[in-house]
Image 1 (cartoon, rainbow, N blue to C red):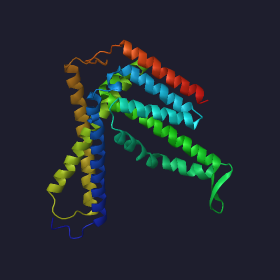
Image 2: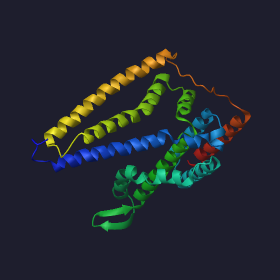
Image 3: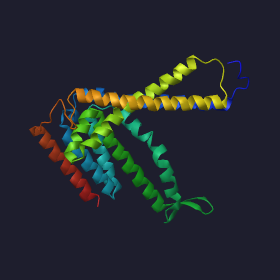
Image 4: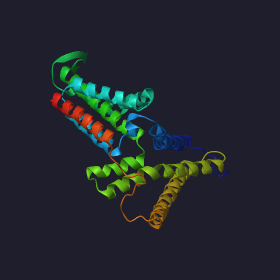
Length: 282
């Protein structure tokens, strides 16, 4: 430790920002993975068959993507809010998760569209730079479609356990291999992030002072290599554990799907609503 007289503040800030990013990603994934408390509540969507929810959400997503009428998209979003209320989903949580994060993902597309889309000028910002009517319309359609689509998907995930959602995807004839890979990736990526956080914590608990840039780079490379080796070993152990418990390449659910009269009724009603949205949105 005494052989490093020149600390590197830039490399220290880089490592700290990396640790903060890993912590924030881990917390976000944990919140999504363990948000199944809502799915255990007694609500409308919780009581329906998972296949009904998947088909209904897919139909509404198609209606939103094909709609050319903002009023129809707003009506679909209102239906989503009503379904969320009937499913005891916290409205504040649903709205904040969608509309607080939406500007960061769509801003890079919406802002250029406001100025680059040709059409009648609405607001002259700078000489040669103006907000056009066509650009504003394009931006509103994009924001409305993305916000409604994310709300639909979030409603499905919050009211249905993740394993049940994956099992219900088979009704869409999605290959089982793809569903298995998706499930394993979603389940174990947060575990690898936890491992990386533990490695950073163990490194900090054994360090006094600051490391130089070269030593920080070697430390990050060592953590990355160790994490890669652990992920490979974990994948082998998980697959052997699955085989020892009877896995033969096909999905097996502990609760088999069973369509009740209420499921058929809600499927017909929601399919009719989505069909009306597609027809009116033309």
